Length: 116
Image 1 (cartoon, rainbow, N blue to C red):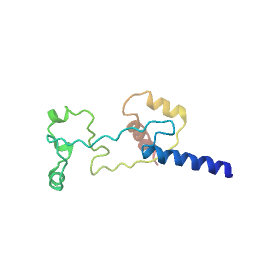
Image 2: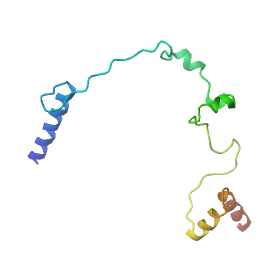
Image 3: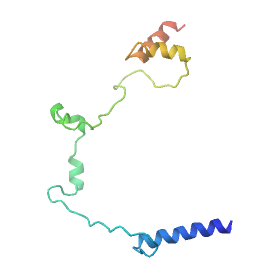
Image 4: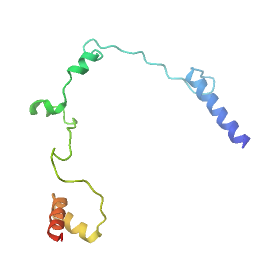
C-alpha cells in the first residue's frame, strides 16, 4: 500500500513542478498564451445579454447561414402526447421501422385501434 501511495505522491509532485514551469523532470512546460482582446468583438456586457434574442426569432435566410444552430425541438405546445419507454418484440419493431419515417406514429395508431 505504501508503494502505491509513494507512486501517486511522486506523480503529483511531477505535475505540480510541471505546472510551475520546472522542466528539470524531462518535459518542457508549455508557454502560457497571453489573453488577446479583439476590439471588433468585445466581451458581452449585462446589457448585451439583456438585448439578446433567441435564434428562433431570426429570419430564415439568416438562420440558414448558421447550419449548426439548434432550434428548440420537441412536441408543439398543447400536444396531448407523452414520452414513454416500452419494450416491443424485435419482429414487431422491425416491421414498423421498415415502413419508413413516421413508424412511431403508426405504432400509436395501431395501439389506438387495439385499445379496449
